[in-house]
Image 1 (cartoon, rainbow, N blue to C red):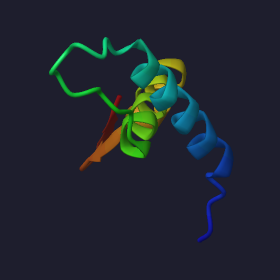
Image 2 (tube, helix red, strand yellow):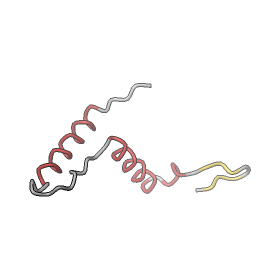
Image 3 (cartoon, rainbow, N blue to C red):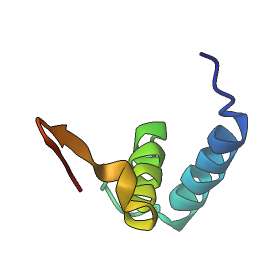
Length: 65
C-alpha cells in the first residue's frame, strides 16, 4: 500500500517553522516539534468523534461501540 503524505509533510514543516519562530532566542527550553505521528493521532481521534462506528470492536456475539 502506498500513501501520499507530501502535503501533510509540507504542513508539518510549516507548523514546525512557525513554532521555532515563536521561540524566544533567550530561552534555553527546546522548541517543541510536531511529528507525523502527532498529526495521524489527531486525525484518528477526530475521525472517531465524527464517525463513532470507526471506534467499534467485535466482542464475541456483539459489537461494542
